[in-house]
Amino acid sequence: MAQSSIEWTELTWNPTTGCTKISAGCKFCYAEVMANRLQAMGIDKYKDAFAIRIHPDTLKIPYSWKSPKIVFVNSMSDLFHDQIPFSFIKQVFEVMNDNPQHIFQVLTKRAERLLKLSHELKWTNNIWMGVSVEDDRVVERIEYLCNTNAKIKFLSLEPLIGPLSNLNLKNVDWVIVGGESGRKPRPMRAEWVLDIQNQCEKAGVAFFFKQWGGRNKKATGRLLNGRTYDAMPKFAEI
Image (cartoon, rainbow, N blue to C red; front, side, top):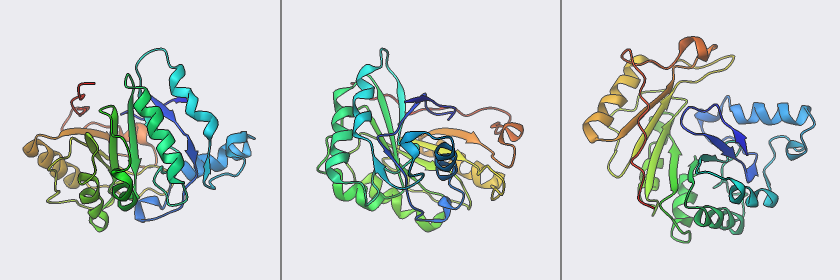
């Protein structure tokens, strides 16, 4: 567990680590860079760098938090990666089911496997399920998400590397938009962001603008239309 600088969450919890690239959004994966850095620092959990690993010892951590938290699950991995055993995914869900006082935000690019396993998992109200969609080549992930049994569904459109017109936002509760950051970030156009914000407004979907990104994301900031957009989905009654 670690305090997070990610604007839309409070903590990160990584019962699995490691991943493999699956689409264009993965090109400059921040988690891979961080895993390699942590390996170099001698952190035992990352001794295998970005190789896919499960960490059963982390399953007890959410039981120790004294107050309600908003938690990003697997900031350093993808819970629905094909190499993560379903038995372990189910254990992670059982921990989330057991701790309804916390909000758990789960994000995947493996939306097809998510849907395949969805009906065998218990979706309590505190589990927010999202998919990453970086451009129009992977919009089918939204349909897979919307056919799951998740109570709260969200989209992470980050890094946004292309326009996403005519999004199907039916049954979507929350949309996050962010530009790519790092040494060689791909540009995000303002008109893409404004179009998505307008789509969310028309559909009544909570809109969160995370960042413009770029080589210095602190300098570019997160103002859109001269203001910040920090909307969150309505918390389901627990």
